[in-house]
Image (cartoon, rainbow over all chains, first blue to last red; front, side, top):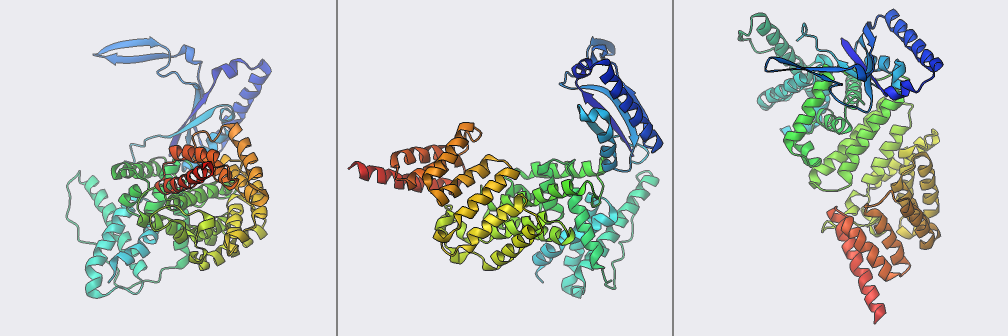
Length: 118
Length: 416
């Protein structure tokens, strides 16, 4: 079963860090990614550029409408994600708790729909 | 054949086992309902099987498998529904092993009380699946429309299935936290039944009885932990006062005015033993400390014999491990009894100054009681009136109204 782990945090916190601190967090992410690759849980994962780079697209009456900014303004912003294999929610939340960002912000755990099963 | 009783006795356990066997809440529920329907038809004619529960489990399991097969066939044939022969019911009652069934119920309660579900959903799901209460009964107990409760249950079951909440007993290091969640749900079921905020007396008694039954289950199934023992003790000691707590006209009777002869001696005896067991095991946790306080009340044959000094100390310990304004309120009452109303008022004033109980009727009610004891009638009347303006519970309102009348009369007499 696959779960999408959405990592939310305050971008301002990241911007306020020194280069050494940012390097430390980066190292933690490297180590974490490697550990879930080794354990076979890893499917995919990426870090995202800040929400300032976000663009929202809608199609209305067949016409593409492009607007600046994210779909929803939130106190904590989506900063990255992992897609993982886990046998159940407990394993997925255990993995989510090990994401460095879980200690600063939060991680939303969402099961993905498996169309081959239903 | 008393089918109502048979259903109450077996429904919860049968369902827990069948959920374990087929791994799907809805499918198991439907199958168990079918099994009971078949039993209702056959048992009055053929007689009840020797092992009724085993028969029900087997029948429900067969029905569930039938449904699964039918579903698979429908999918294969592209929706062409085929007529299936009815499933075979077990003719020979088999001996159901006792242990796996207990494990089923333990796994099920940990699933129902999974922290990924909202607390209210945990409570509803536990009552539905482990206690066998109907959706309507649960809705009535929690004063929500049945449709709302039904939706709450459907959503919870969907989440269990779609997010794959596991059906297992958690292991260390997760066990303590997960066990706390289970105990909280049991305690919420109990207090909902006990607090008499509203609702029907029958359903409320049922909730208390179910909470105590679940408490016993956890004590038996999770040995070596003292929190469940403390919780069971607390529930038994509170439940022992049920008959004395509300007067014939539905008003709440305060502890010192209760007819102690109508307290349930059997529940008190068991509750006291359990408190000692919990405390001896080093489990001076939130539930055990509250149970110890309840045990001190239970020990006093008359209200005047209550050991308020010890009770005040226990509330102090409780406030240390679990700081809460409500506990502080109770500590104030105990201090007032042990060292005089002025001392109690001092604790209340410190509490009022923090402003955390703003709008909560129990603070002015406690103040009014202490002022009444000090014969400061006018101040007491003002505090009772304030409490009355905030209280919503009918039984409590009656009590406050009676007291307000008393102190007003006393104030008037003094003026003459």
